[in-house]
Image (cartoon, rainbow, N blue to C red; front, side, top):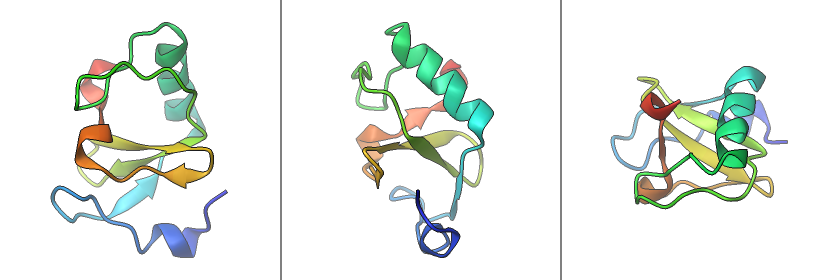
Length: 84
């Protein structure tokens, strides 16, 4: 699990806005979409691995996955939240 102090240092790689940890409900919804083979990242790839968590951009439009306890902060790996 990522510490609150560490998360407070992280920003969106696209627009440099702060990120916040996604709540359990959002992570469950994302993982349900992963299980159904319906969740795509900004690069167009279908995600196949369950998320340990996610970091949500301040505007609530994009989530960056946390996989194997590692935040994946690449623009193309961001998950548009309008698809859930």
